Length: 203
Length: 203
Image (cartoon, rainbow over all chains, first blue to last red; front, top):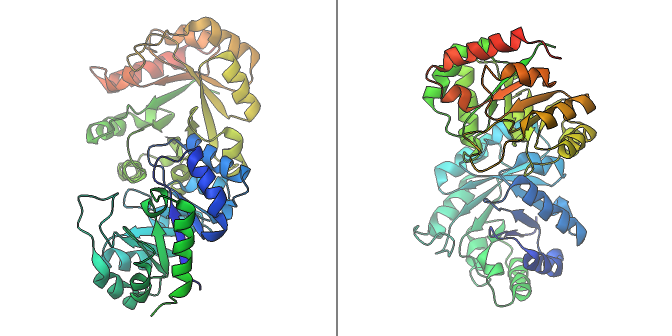
């Protein structure tokens, strides 16, 4: 499997974000709609806007709201600690991809045991979106990817430059938020991530 | 169909509420879990607690979260303006009951046209939960129930004493929140609603 690039929305998805997505969409594998303060209808409006620019919902992963993912035939749902469990989701929606956000080896083991299709692990580096939390570093990432067969994507403070060591630590790709949305040039940032991911093929 | 009593949770569901539900559950037709500020996991915890006291989830309607209703085999979902549309919900989950909250004749007509299984119309009387909004009164309720075949339940400031005129205006029952939770004796309040609903059989 090629290394994947997941782009996570930053909670303030707007027309500006849509214009960026329009220009980068061939270079990302998945777009996560993670808009915790928006209503279901707001999220559906975003999905319709994505359809409107020709972005395939088969590349969209919806945060927490399994119903929206199913109703709009998105590829999957991203589950956090406050979400329904993987077994509950898979029990009703077995064909939906279900990813779990994890922050430790034990959570990662549990995620694999529960049947997660993939894990988002982080945050690996200091991250603008988690200013008060200690980054977890590469050692635990390496331990997780060494022990588990479930694909793990690294999240948190990832840059194109750091992609090499993350992939060498066994990640199957990276998930990025501020590294794209807050970049001076988001389109160039995505290209740089894509190139780095294509260059480093894993350890 | 007998007139129905829907009890709506008040956004602060706790162990105290659970104890009340335990004592009244044979006297209510449906319990709506409407806990807008709670996470999916919180709502699932409430559903598990309800199962724990023997309250059948076949009598539970979940607000907004179709996924939770499906995963826990609750009877239905209650949809508001910020929720997915009835056609979207029914398209993916045809066997789930879908109720729509409406506030006018035109919204009610739209709800029926969209395939809602029932409508909650309100608020009919001055309501503690909508202090700044003008109550809609009985005239529009009468107009709605006269024009539509979809069952309509009246909500907003309903008391056992007001139940008669609501049923005579064509409602198929009432939905109650503070009339039960804020009653001096919630168990007696439910009994009084039940008796009023059984007495007045509609116009």
